[in-house]
Every structure is written in structure tokens, then in C-alpha cells.
Length: 180
Image (cartoon, rainbow, N blue to C red):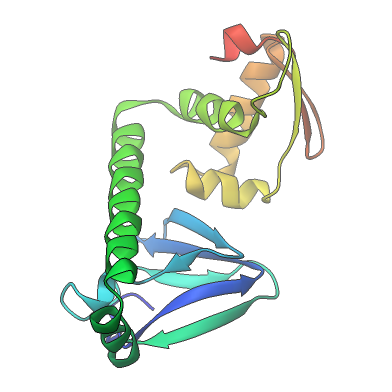
């Protein structure tokens, strides 16, 4: 939980875990979703001793818990691990900076378009693509800094403009150029 004393960090062995913040009125902002192989809460071990956000499993998950004391000893014995940690924290900082920029400078439909484009595989050919949403729409809304109703309106707008076609979790991008 946000505010708890940080005594460990976590690696997701299986499943998915959302890292999020709650506003005083209960609005949730998902900062990231950690899946198998991802770590979270490592920065809290070195930055003031309290977790800056909460974590909750989105599905059955197994986590590896690494205590601060053991990790600090490992860092002392393995400089390559320290360099990898710095790289990981730098990547997280870049992602958080990008999230702040997107949430404060773009509207919901633009954020949704960016998210859909990020899900298109690099080998997509032509001006069309098919993607599948892997998270529930309530989770996607929280990731995009909005509520499900506003997200639904953004999906409807893109659909009405014939940029996408929606069938449940399957989304066909009808015009990649317009979406971007």
C-alpha cells in the first residue's frame, strides 16, 4: 500500500500486477502494469523508505520478494547488477515523464489512439491492423487517466469516424494513418 514502509521490492514471476495511485476522492490512476519478468517498488528502497504507490494483482500472480538488506548486499558484490538497476530506474523515469506529459497535455481520444498504436505489431502491413485488448476497459480507462464512460465515448468517436471497428476485445484498425 502507498505509504507503507518499503522493506522489499518485487519481481512478478507470473500474472499481472497494477501499480496505481488513488486520489482523495477515490479516482485511480494506473502508473504501470507489471507482468511476468517485470519488477516494481525498487526505487522506494532508496528514496525515503515508503512506497509511493499501491500494488494489486489483476489476476492470480506469484511474486518474488527481495528484501532491501539482501539486495543492498547483492549490489555491493555485483557492480553489473547496480548498473542494471540504474538502467531500470532510468527507464521508469522516462516512462513516468512520458505519462505525466500525456496525461496533462493530450485529450482522452488522443491518449487512446496512442495506446492502440503502441499495440500494433511492427510487422503490420498496409494501412490496417488487428489488435486485441489484453486488459479490461476499466483498467484501460484508469491507465489513460479517465473513467470508463469517457473511454467508451472515445472508442465510439473513433468508430464513428471509421478509424476503428470494435468487436469485444478485438479491435480492427481501419485507417492507421488517421489513427496516428
